Image 1 (tube, rainbow, N blue to C red):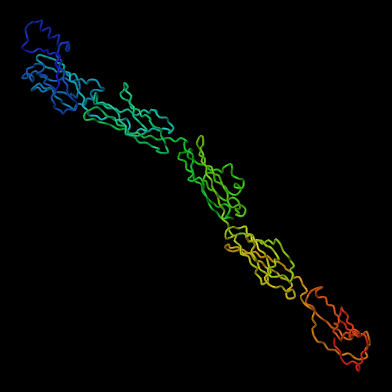
Image 2: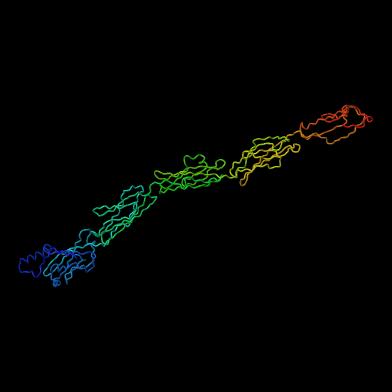
Length: 541
């Protein structure tokens, strides 16, 4: 142990004299104490076990150890809890109670305790200074276990944030020497020296991005200079505050969806979903249709600005419009707001809701019966507003008639032609039924009827119902009177069926014309003379 003797002065029995002046000097010392007594200085670490010897006061003062008990050698303390005591047997100063330097002395200066050593008969007072040296028995500690900072993500690098300062009751080298920070890419530690000690600062060295990481957890460690070192930690949480630095983003630039035509009003056809990495109002998204969208789109579809749901507002008809393009904008509620865009293409799926249509572009309503097979009597075109299989058409003549459809050079265009010999005398009029059927499910059909009149040609000769004919007449008939009437028929029509009668002259019978006459219009035969049975019994013509 360290011991320093500044003054070694004392009065023992061997130096006594009967000199009155010395006695007077002794009384002055007794009255005025410190000015003349010896002072010894010892040094001892704190936290030593009770009973540890600080030093031998009696020896250092030059006292007779054998007389210490008799002279009541002791420590005089004004405190009830005396830390040090002396051993009257050997004169040693020892630790009587636990020593805590931080309780006895505060600060980093020397911790000195002044002890009064009292010896009686003769009376002596000695002052002993005991320096309590520090040991590293305390770890640095922070006033709080955690410190939270809220830092906006747009904060520029270089910004400083003061951390809690750690405290260490130990002094000198055992006090706080430095601070350390866990390794990270955004912050570094800066320490400022002040009268109060070392003050740590958190310094932003790289900009924060809340969307990449919204919270950073760091550990600040205060380390003292003792051996072994002691340390204390502070949990530092950095909450990154959002700024409106992200615009809403759709997962696709173009969405394509398909809906059926005539879908019910109010049907939801699609739900938009734009994401904004910001938070709070900066991340709240509202939807709207772009300003370039055609007016028809507004009439057909409705967009919920909060949910992004697209619903049917009007009657969707494939035949009217087979696709719609919607430019959708998603905007956040930041200041200023940021927006993202996408396009939604809604394709209309055709349903078989339209029957085929048959249009007669040319028609000869009257056809001559002598027309050759393949004669064109009409041109028709078949259309269907539906598409795909719903618009594919099968056309045919559905009734039994001597006509057929011949495809034309253009799709779904046909010629109605004769396919056999016509005979007006058998059938003079035809109702041609043309049926067009699409291939939808279920199929839809349309029927068109063409009315065709067969015109007559003179293809039939007049004919008598009976040939030859025989008749009798009475002789002595009256000349000029009708004696017989013939009647012929002709299957033709109108002028082709108009019959004219006449008697055919055949060789030797030419003289028959001299006594017979036929009415060309009605076939009545009259005799031009009176016949005589005895002269002419029979004749023919």
